[in-house]
Every structure is written in C-alpha cells, then in structure tokens.
Amino acid sequence: MSRRLAAVLLAAAAAAGCSTGTLELEVGDCFDDPPSFGSVTSVDVVDCTEPHDNEVYHVESYPGTGDFPGDDVIRDAAVDVCLGAFEGFIGVPYEVSRYDIFALWPSEDSWESTDRDIVCAVYDVDGERLTGSVSGAAE
Image (cartoon, rainbow, N blue to C red):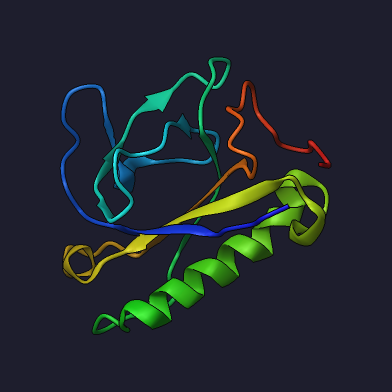
C-alpha cells in the first residue's frame, strides 16, 4: 500500500459561496478535496452522511508566538500534531491504518492575521470516498 501525507498551507481568507474558510473548520467537519493543493483558503464542507473526501479529527493551535517560524518548522509541527492525534481518533496506529492524514497549517500571510491553527483531517489512502464518520474505525 502506497502512503502519502497530504499537507497544504492554510491561508487566511474569507469563504465565498458554499465553501467554508479553512480557519472555520472544526472537529467533525467533512469536506471534499480542494481543486488544487497549494495555498488553500476554503474547502467545500459537506454533511458527513454524504460521500466526502476528508474528515477533520483534530484542531490545535501552534504553541509558538512571535514571528512566523518558517515553512519547514510549521509543516513539521503540523505533521507531529496530526500523527499524535491519529491513533486516538481512528483506533489503530497510523502505520497500519488504511487512512492517511491531510494537514492544514498557517502560511506566513495567515500568521500575520493571528492564524495559529493546525487542522488535521483523515482520508482513505486508496482514494475511496468516506461516508459517515471514521472515528473509531480501527482500520
């Protein structure tokens, strides 16, 4: 099984239309993949009972203050945070799970707007759409 850790920058921006700004995502929200995986400012949140690509399972503020710590530092922190919360949500270690991590973290621009949130979402590593919550799936 090929694994990848999807991780993208979180940018501060207002949501438009039916999209939800990434800064507004909460645990339990389900959303579809963004059209591109660069700097993501909004996603299409859907009811979790409907087919979807990702489910938010953890949100945590980056503990640092002051100047933006740099892309590599914040990315590494996001990966650590999301991996640390993974088993408690899914019920099995990341290494043996059929699910993978989609992480969002602050960009340098959003940091200037006081954004510190790291958002952790889960998706099926084989690209299957999820239906319902995968909390406690133990797969």
